Image (cartoon, rainbow, N blue to C red; front, side):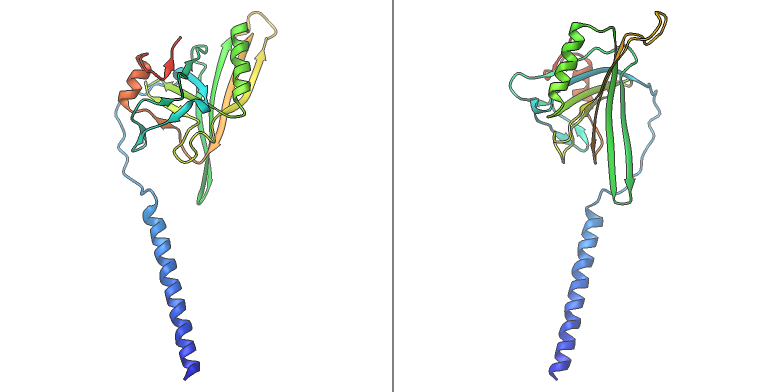
Length: 218
């Protein structure tokens, strides 16, 4: 009789384990973001970017995100702000390159910009980015459609995976007629498991309109 009781008990334990494991797996499926229908917007699409703003990652105090959009003005530490950086026209590039393998996805975020003609002012910017790089840099990029994006921040990592200085190079060119002669290219980069966050239309309008309190405009 004892032998049969042990067999029944062992079977009951296996059943309980299977039920619990199934519940955990189902919870994981339910907890994941479900695929939703996507409606294409029939509107003009403009490539490129019109503006970029930079700040040290430590300057950002808090971000309000609702349904994947930043819905309130960024809260900054003390009197710190994002600073407008006037790169050459049509030289600002914002990329997000995603690579994954089944249950893993990682995005490489990159903000690249070009500046013509070396100067003391550019040296100051380059040195400041080099100094800020170890603890990270954040960028706001306004694209050709007027939509602004916060790069180097996500809700899970916060600013722990902010941008760092990946490229800082000068190309003098060899001839006066070379188009990109005396050009300085600066690129900021980082990697995370999440996409850059867009600002909603209300906050975005303050950015493009030059009235965002968390930005110092040129």
